[in-house]
Length: 227
Image (cartoon, rainbow, N blue to C red; front, side, top):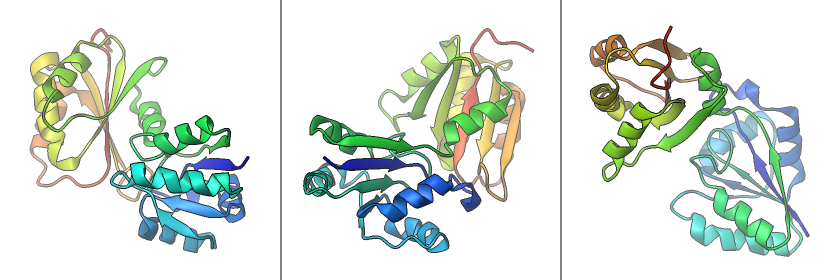
């Protein structure tokens, strides 16, 4: 029996890396990385020198077998993504499932994540919320946005910069001017921005921006929330 570690990595600020995460990565036999180059920057800073291999959305199904072979041979393996907790809108779920199914230990090493960070900073109700992740690019996207507009609890969405305004426009069609929304961009990084307002005003501001860059989390209050 071996251990598969799911290790959370900083979502921006490298100083957010925990002591336990560093010690875990220094102790395992292998590290599976979403992008070995991105992880390499983090590993160099914390002097982590372990064999690594790629483990991303395009090869996850294939590489699960490799992870399982390593575990079956008695080697401990850690999975890291470019940012946040493996398995949350990132590779990791399939490996964790396979490890459980084959009698290995699965140990999470918690740390920063964009979901809870954005929700906490939004000032919107967070006693209950639903995480939508990235919405479908085409089929089903409009239906999901309509469901978010109709939800009675807070919704959290990951959105790419070039789709943000279109998302806000479509949400506005269903939710109207008064819905409270927070846009969290570049969390924990130098240009961190949390813009919170009613949707009509928020949409007008973001329409006027020349270009939008960075990682974005959108927090949408439930339909009955008022201030």
